Image (cartoon, rainbow, N blue to C red):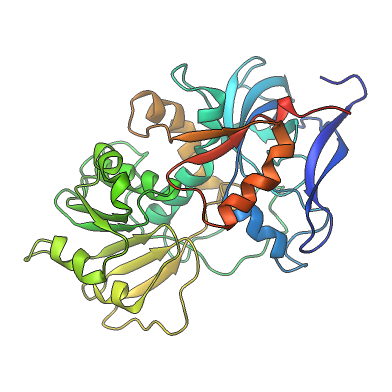
Length: 361
């Protein structure tokens, strides 16, 4: 750790302002927390979108960075599950202590998981947000009851939730939905890939996903049964469904909802999306549209249960690693990486960097 007790952090200093590299104090772990040297941080669309968030949603300077991994340096009072030297992955939060766009971060011991030896720190850093978003979207009830941690206690959000499926991380849920079809829109996205893997474990079949044809082989290898060219009309999805089946669930991993998508659902079906649902879309015959929110700090009771099983799920290959692209230069590489995300110039990989490699002036 740096002798000055200062570290490099990336922050947004004003609404719509650029990311700026600043000095901040190295945080101290409190009761139930651990201090992590962040050696892997993944970039997400949420990070660039928060630059344009309403000014009252989060205070400035705004710290983002929702995916991280690293080595535990210190443990706080009462910590029993994690020890110094452990490699862990975690989901960051939007404050100066807990975000992953900095050299050191504080993490709740119940909202992290040890990393299997088969995964590198950079690979592990890519997992938390996509997996939690997919898992919550499929398993939360609607409306989900927030159980925020101290970090998220002042965070207010409109009602969110999920499809209410049996949580895949609980015992005896393998093949719980055997033979039922599901559609995953945007299967090559990181959230989409996690949704496909969860659906496979739960027994859904067919698992129909939309993506660029160049990603078909990979998506089939992780569980998709049918890959429909994303440029084709919704009729192509309909043709992939068995004639006698009723489609009760669509998971939209890339916020691309259309009326034609919703109309694919059988009466009473659920359309789950990670973004927003256009006001022009209507839901009839008991169909519903639900926006999900993948924040373990906000739904901590569910998040803790998922993190408690995550090391095992990764070791057993139920959740597989995502393809990554490392950005060189540590924290200084993040703004250009986020521009690529914003411009749609990233496909089927997670951009990651190592904050510990940030140049020190």
